Length: 224
Image (tube, rainbow, N blue to C red; front, side, top):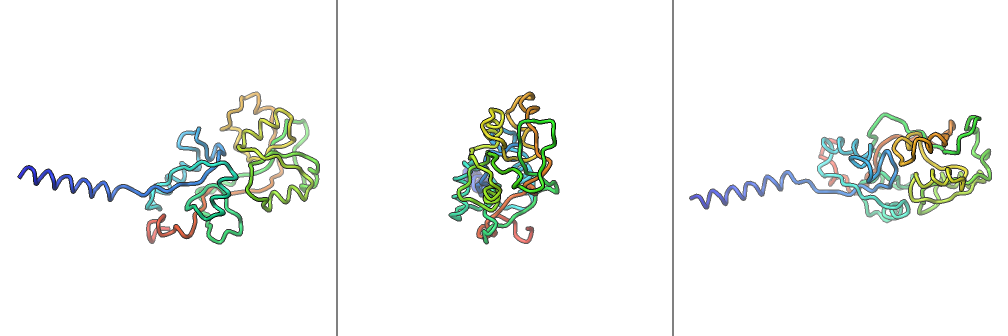
């Protein structure tokens, strides 16, 4: 009798564990503190927001998959993805965006600090300037706008690498947003030497992208 009871307990435990165990799904990301980074608690603020969202919307558990920018771009282009913080091309018919916050992120350039204000009316005013930015797989609309303005691009594998190039006076600008300094590995002195642009290249919401081909697998039905 004890043996049968023990077996029934084992079977019950197995089914409870199976029911509670969620499928794990990769979330493509690149090193972009404070939003996504292996070095930050919870892998950054965007992952923390996604984890909260997942509790009531997902039937899966999102886990980080950090890739170099060009590799992330390639994986998404090939269609081998379900979740991503790295943006797909704007014309990707399989990608959908979900906002995780009402906050708007201002994206622009960092330069060595000067007394005058750092702003422009048109990008062509920055003609001849060298800007460091994350390496893309293909030239997108934003990259083309820099080229059309007569700017030169230097590709890096992280935002901090671009900021270091500015500090070493190897490039004129580093592409980034208004929050990256606070979570970078730069010293207080280095941060004070940098100036963020008043003008912005783009304003973006904090959120994630999902592949609609994974929709049934990702979301709790009738709750997305």
